[in-house]
Image (cartoon, chains in turn green, red):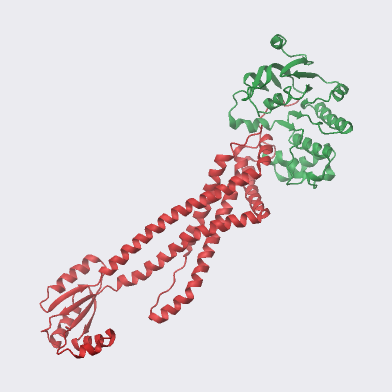
Length: 232
Length: 318
């Protein structure tokens, strides 16, 4: 699903967020990216989500090279990805239902179909009763779950989550992570960036650790070892 | 995992064309909803557009009326024939009959010397001084109304009349008309310039409103881009917003001009009475109305298009 070959990302400021990162995440796998803040977790996710482009190296999303993807192909490729943000990025001017329905709306689903799928997604995160609420009236955990419902409503093949539990207490964090595990069990590829090491250990999923832009630990079996030595 | 190709898929159970039309409809309604939700901004923008467009609209109507009035003058072009003082009234009347039978002559009117003097005494206010004259200095006059408005034909007629032995002077009263037409032409061009400038102003007003609208919905644009919205999808509600502004502004400008003309019509009727004239105010025809509304709507679309092209592409998630 995701392949990085010696990906380096240098921002215009000269800061190197990723240095020679190579990794491979297979279809249907679930993995965590850990590391201190500023280690490059977000940059890695942004490259996969087509928000940033690698400066050097190759990033592939299901064998599609992301380095020089024409601009007009970006939206359609993004429809295969569900993205969950630490600050959930909900739109506060409309109720929960409309927030969750947005991806379906963009893809031109019929209203009846939108209603059906939106309610199914809300049901999955346990918020069906809140569909008419405005996001501002929800708790942090509920808002995050609305964000998850929006990310999965169109049944993406890949779920990306950037610090999804960053602002939540341990109980809520565990609930959120369990939702990701559930999605993974039905075949969705999941990549979660988090620094919540205790929780990650509980879940027993492969882990990649970034430190100052370099991949210093990779539990994933099928990564290319020979390309990996670069960081030393 | 089943079906693990990253597909450029079409959503199931939905026809792409109807989805496209559906989104157009949704954008149209949505942008109208936005306008409804922000009445203060909308009212101000629409008011500025309406007032701006009412100026060229008003000038246009003014010119249209002047044109109509001057058209009446044009058809009343006449030639005055001042006859030789030695011509007797009998000869003069015979001449009038001859002329009235000529080609291109619609009507003739005879004014005798005596009548002319009487008229002059009455109208000029020089009555007493005229009484001191020993003889009547005024000639018999024949007023000829040409049957055609064509300048060449009228000139031709004038030359023939001038050539008659009894005619001392043949005078065509068109010089002042030509001046009037020149002035109207200048006014028309001025109105054209004003219209272009004000259309440009409307373009800027709508462009700026849409730009602010884009800024206000920055977050929404980012989020929709992140979940796979195409540029066209994001652009659409803003373009419809511009169309609404243009349409409403156009209707408002029409109302302003119509109300303005209603306000003038009272005094104008009194003027009509005083001059015993028959001037009718012309307001916008249906065609004018359609042109006004269509052009303001187009300006709205163009203005929002410029704003969207300039600003929407700059917004990318980071």
